Length: 308
Image (cartoon, rainbow, N blue to C red; front, side):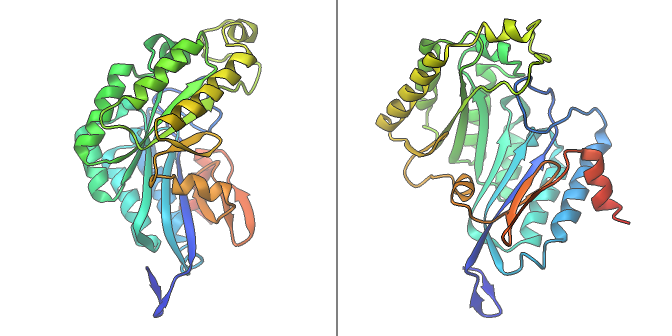
């Protein structure tokens, strides 16, 4: 355990880092993210994150960081050198434990064995891959930029890079999805070799009445393709029972893990434990206070790189 002036650090802290960039914005996603073709923006944003983290070096000095989660957006769209700078900064600014759970989210269309190998060597030891569906037709309706074949390549790349702790995301209640295609997606993920350590299930939620870039003319057209609410309940109930029978324990509403791979960072939120969030839209619970940051990349960069 980390030491503080000869004493053990008893307080634990999670760190969340938001990467608000995507190749393409998914129409159903309510997380803050933007698309950008400005190659210099990524580097400046990483500089802002590092500067922001350094502001908490003293305040977090009595804590041991036992979980780090780099989410998005799509973290793996950031150039490798910039991401490696960020990973090194986390380990430099905070007192990271030897057994830290260090997660990075990834879109299957944005990774390679070479890049993932570098991240694994730098200290990332858990990967979260957004499959969403094992049906290419359903992926197309969701506006995803990857296919099932892309996912299979990324899963193999992650294993080749050294990752043994891998989460796979799935969505239910999506356009034209049926109970049988949902069963297929579940069985497909569970049958992966080797089996993932964690599976996350998310129910599609519509946040407004604008179909945006969904490909549907109106929100009514979109809603007409969604499974009935009763079917969504059956999908979720079946998933809970099926995953349990396959050795995945339910650790909270949307998370299912094999024994020994319970998601440390997710559970901090559920247990009301402390965590610091960095990036626009990121939330924190630290020193008894909950707070978040304005959803603006421009504002975040300016405030942290030009504070005066």
